[in-house]
Amino acid sequence: MNANINLLSSYKLGNLELSNRIIMAPLTRARAGVERIPNALMTEYYLQRASAGLIISEATNISEQGAGWGETPGIHNDEQVKNWRTITDAVRGKGGKIFLQLWHTGRASHPDFQPNGNLPVSASAIQPKGEIHTPMGKKAYVTPRALEMDEIPGIVRDYAQATRRAQEAGFDGVEIHAANGYLIDQFLRDGSNQRNDSYGGSVENRARFLLEVTEAVVNAWSADRVGVRLSPTNPYNDMRDSNPIATFTYAAEALNQFGLAYLHILEALPGHVLAAEGDRVSPYLRQAFRGTFMINGGYDRELGDNAIASGEADLVAYGVPFITNPDLPERFAKNASLNEPDPTTFYAPGAKGYTDYPTLKQLASVVS
Image 1 (cartoon, one colour):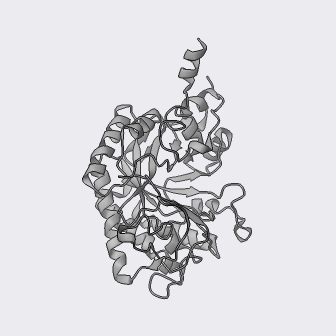
Image 2 (cartoon, one colour; image 1 turned 120 degrees about the vertical axis):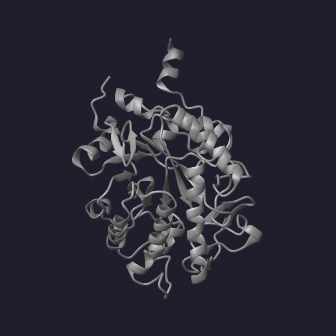
Image 3 (tube, rainbow, N blue to C red; image 1 turned 90 degrees about the vertical axis):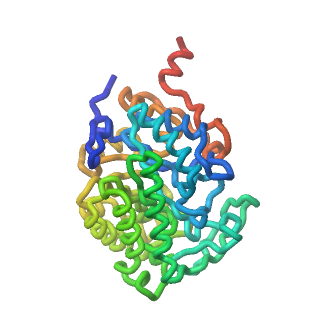
């Protein structure tokens, strides 16, 4: 066994002791059914991956308005809380740690997902390019409704309430999803925020919603149980910013005031970097943020280990490798080969491509 790698060293995250630095990234898998209630299949999925230093759950809707993807789970009613508790108890029983990712999709939604067929909401009434999968099939994105000033505090309260529910559901903490073109990101980046009030214009104004949400979530629980995820150069959901280094360096510096558990940065994946955004932003954010720094986006065993060794990051999050390898830390320890992914099952219903990827032990038992 070749276990002498930095990724396998333990790490103290606030008051939590992580057994390794291999983090399971948040991964939408769309297995919660039309009622958006966690279930036994999801319990099996997360339990299989409990050897991660920390599991960050799939993006979870903080409210009915926040939904924009079919069969994704919520954390806004009692039944959802009860069933999430089954999952967290199972993960903790196997020695794992798990955070819940708090999600409001904003304009990356459709009236088919919204209460009473309402328009999705956003920072500004700017229609994103592209199409969205709805219960009625693929449809073009619609032009969202810009949030009124007096509506914003209500959404901030939704984040706080979801945080309290996550604590009740037995999670070890929460991650604020401020990445990938969803609502908070829509306020942050100037390509989607053209407001002329105190939430638009300057970077200080565009970051205001992020900071208000973070303050509310921290006050609802504890700063050392709260992380934030950002994606400075990810164009997903038709996103862009004229100066991502300036925008996100400001955000990272401003987040220092809270004493968060971590800052989680998704680097642009190969082929995703826009021409005007070619510089990697995470090194600037590593310098700006004074707490635990997590990176994600195209890292393998060697790249992740080098990132820890060089001080580029404290923790490395893995997405697809955890989909296909529930025992990823063991595979990294043994430098074993990884299972190949089947992208056709990433968001399909059922166990296929979800809970049936074999572990090394299962493969060995077949051989023997």
